[in-house]
Image (cartoon, rainbow, N blue to C red; front, top):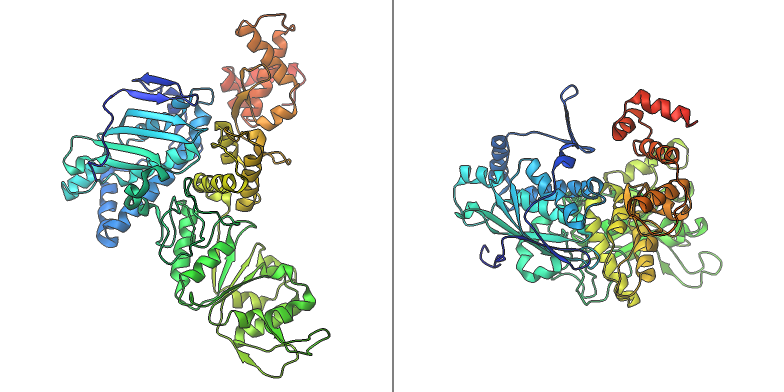
Length: 610
């Protein structure tokens, strides 16, 4: 594996900007901006990197943990666990990149990852070749690692071996670059000191560009064998031919929903926890209750549970309880005999009978009426149903899976849900995390949906702009994956052919984002904004006018410039600093390089609220 890729001949860092310009550089940007984000707080036992809590850990203790994992779980399971741990760490660091250097070039922003990797004590990162075009989704990265702590510990314990061992760091690089690019990027270690070589060398590319070559590496991103980790390209033999996949470049038609049950993709801790729970309960007969917000994919999880269970050969019958009128609940669930009620001209089996030998999925169980709940409880307890108008009792062998976005305990206290039914359903609850809790999975989801709607609408859209990715990463996603589908489809429709989806193509229905971003003002100059949407909506606001005038003065713009007073400029700076510090006057004062009393005096003198 170590000789499959030929390293670049030029040892200098070859950088390709979003416009395709190539720049050579040997130096990283100054690291002072990153150092300023690192805070030690021994008084309360915390270390902070930005808003992320960090730890100082002995490398020897990490080596002991690594040995314990390998000896107890096996080398493959240990490698997968450490790779996914590194992926999560890299994804979190990627959130800092554009916040720390919002007005820098794309390559300087990206350098935050390698520099943080060195600052965190993992290794020395020397760039060999770097090509980045976020809007077109093009990425190629080649780096050399020296003084790597991970392989030092592995070699100390196990000696020289036959496989690369920088598993956590490979995961880190993949997680960082995937979130930065907004699409799945996978690195492979093509040289490693654990192989007896002088240094470690890694190469990173989009998942689909690796083809079958990276199949072995990709499997370590899978928490369970029934998931696809970062990609759904590897179709299993038992998957139906029309199953959708999550990678660009696959020519099969996409499915109409976000994911088929064979396409559970992700690498976030929340996603992996759900997968572990599903695997544990799959081969039992226990009733499962999926909990979570609307749109998080509870039915996808239910279908996956059925597919890997002992009753997978049986039918999977889904019922949306909210869509059945109360008067028809009994007939829909249990069936009806001819003449059982008016207009019942023929006998019909209910959902329980249709699911016999398989799985019955009861979605939105929390909205059933109390009468319907009582009838359902009896069927669950006795394993028997009786059609309307029939005198015969029928036994059914059904695995029941339920789902709700309501807090059933609150519903019980409000008298809207039966407590005995709750205890009957709540045998094995699984909470599916919201999209806000699994942001590491956003690149995979966005990549899949971009491909899906490009094909559906026959649009030549290349990807997402940098500020669109910033907005998507900082958005609250109240509608979760269902809302993401809508936004990406809207962006594909509005974006120009041959261009990228920008922020203005996505948030057109009153969605609110709150992120510190930079964008182009009306005169083409770069300007900061708490929300680019707010900036667009208030294009003639006081702050923008002041910034535009200052930019015109500093940049030597030709023509007559509207008069601008120093008092207006200072007022705009004061407001911006306080807003950026979220009302923390001490932090705002530090930003402006003055004391807190001086800031308070200036605010009061202008009639601004303190």
